[in-house]
Amino acid sequence: MPELVAIRTARYMEAQIIKGRLESEGIPVLLRYESAGLVYGLTIDGLGEVKIMVPRHLAEEAKEILGRCTPDDFENTASD
Image 1 (cartoon, rainbow, N blue to C red):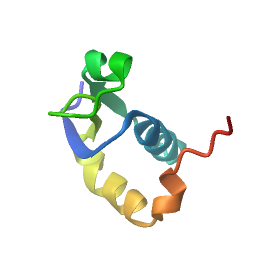
Image 2: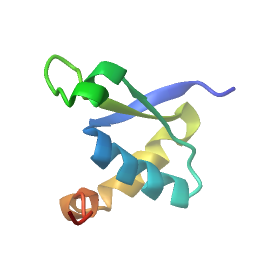
Image 3: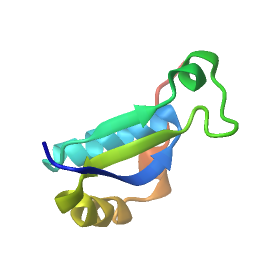
Image 4: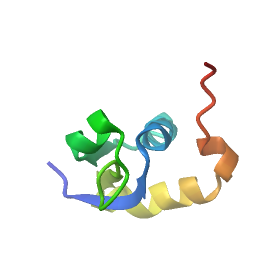
């Protein structure tokens, strides 16, 4: 199994969007997060923070892909 490195931290919904974007480019992604933050919706002291992890050898490519995106690309577009 390749070594994974964190390339970015984000809120849960943003991390899901980033994961989908990277996977659409063929880059495998693992999201690492503290479950208490997700369950309770907390975003303090690292709770609610999601680390976006990719294989080390693909980290630069993943950062380049995300660098081409605009902040609007990561907005939660789900309607209520």
